[in-house]
View 1: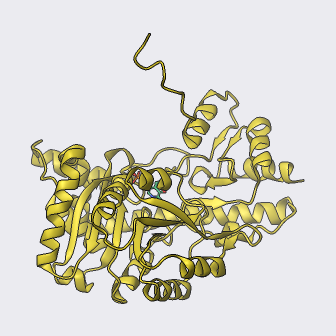
View 2 (view 1 turned 90 degrees about the vertical axis):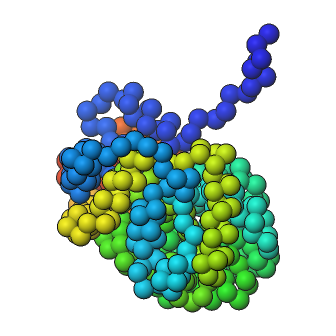
Length: 402
Ligand code: PLP
């Protein structure tokens, strides 16, 4: 009898399953709105010009393939922290940010979860927004934390349940960890306003909760990396110590390169050095040290002003294209088709995704009848829409709603 005969089959990943169904569909009109990766105006994967140029620079310099240190490329992690916190942030200026390179945003969350499970003294409970990115629960559970939820999305308004959010944070046990999406909340596309962020910061302070920011989309929400960093910078200015997971998958289009960073703000350089030493002890047995190439690419862009400026323009270009698709979809549903329902949320939501309000039966009907694929919670990747397919998509939505 085989050693593994007792291994039960696990459920398929809900998002990757959609990609499989999409690939198997032979209809030329098919659209995949399940994936969380940017597509250009022709529906094609997009490699940024800034990235192409950085690749050329690296090739011309004949960079070697030596190991990185355990916490990664120091110039890269410094520049990543500067991008998130801002050069003027007190902990950045004071050399009090402990930061490590990570295997993209997922790895940053996992390093953070493990570090908090080991050293955070006040609680082993982490609160996630409901709903949240599907991988958050297993990441933090596997890190050894207890996962609970706080209200976030209000189905009736297709917007933020601000009252529920504040109530749940007020009722959380003192010292609990709270996961916050820094911008472009996945899967809902619904973010707090600056005023709401200020109020959330106040509640977190009052209840002595610990804020852990997941910033997977800096620049992707508004088109400005500074504006999208508002929440993180506000919390730091307010004196919170924070944890932060960063990803360069979306904003630099470096998905498969796995470039990210995890950081903690500490009291001073001496404390930072102690935290650094323990981050190394967390990371070393997991993967020894992170991959080199993507960090070199990202750092080349972050450290050269001409590439940095080109990159910021390209981030804005991606965000603007998504925003223009929101407007076209809204117009098409409301003016062209007069589709029943209020579709204003399509325009007010932000980032890669829109929570359309379509239910599971409608999402299923769209796949089966119209060859349009999305997750069963009605989430669509706005980046999958373009001038060539948006009219067909709106028409298909109209048919399943009417
Ligand atoms: N966090 C959120 C909210 C995300 O949506 C994603 C990607 O979809 C990630 C983190 C991590 O992605 P990656 O590991 O590719 O950086």
